[in-house]
Amino acid sequence: MHPSCPHCSSRNDSTSGPRKILRDGYFRRRSDGRVIQRFHCRSCERGFSHATLSLCYRQKKRTMNHRVEKAYIEGCSLRGIARTLGLSRTTVVRKFVFLGVNAERELEEMNQNLPKVAQVQFDEQETAESTKLKPLSILMVAEKHSHRILGFEISEIPASGRNAEKSLKKYGRRLDRRAAGRRKLFSQLKSFIEERAVIESDDHPHYPSEITSAFPQATHRTHKARPARDHGFDELKKGKDPLFSINHVLAKQRARMSRLARKSWCISKRKERLRLHLAIFAVNHNRARARLEKHVESKRGSG
Ligand SMILES: [Zn+2]
Image 1 (tube, rainbow, N blue to C red):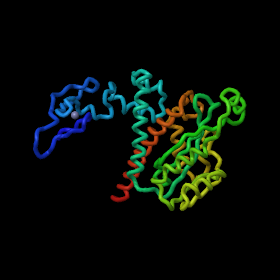
Image 2: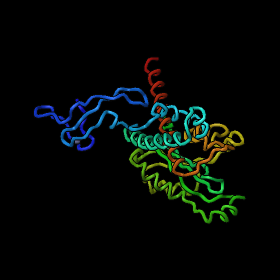
Image 3: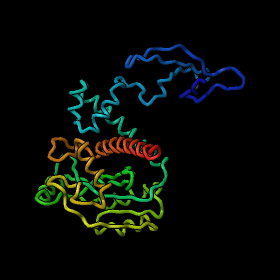
Image 4: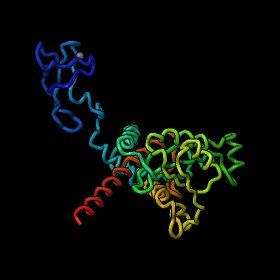
């Protein structure tokens, strides 16, 4: 069956009549050597090919997409990836944006196609844009059992401690936008979470009222913040942690994303790019968790 025309959406009628879409030879794509079928549309007299419909249309280094993605979620930096794969920085950034935009869409679809979740955990993690004087907060929401990431939101926060005064002087007043971020994400996630879900978090004073207004039927359980297991390893806690699921996701994120690592040279220059990187991480994390679940399930079935 020939594809329909991407320009005028004409298609070949399966029953009778003259055919509108004709084969029109083929070409060998330079970027990966694949043979691509070309078509001609008789309605609009324009040409197209199987490649026109692809997400990677007109990419010159399409074979590198997967490698760049893997490197990004194994904690490599932008420049590190450019050096090891022999690409220019511009190419790596372009690929990164392409992968990020696709990942955002995939994360949404992934959660839409899976059943609604009944147990949820959420927490916030700090990072910064450009400089420590411009801190950001990442809100992460995940399913308790599977650790599946449901969504995230990035919000600006004011600098604190000894950076507060410097930040104010250099960049002006910076508002705390976390509450607005939480409201936005919670309302977006309504379609992924059961009405009577159990939602767990730490005992931040603002959480209970926000959860009640976003999920009026849900049960909100709070847990006291626990001390970190090691210095500089805040996400993993001493002893048995009731918020282990979400803390594990956040710890993994710190370890796997160069820009979130502690004492790192890498930093996000733009909030937008942090969002794309988080989407790439989330999609790969969810895929890995899904494979793991399937594996455990099959073991249980056979044993
Ligand atoms: Zn056409």
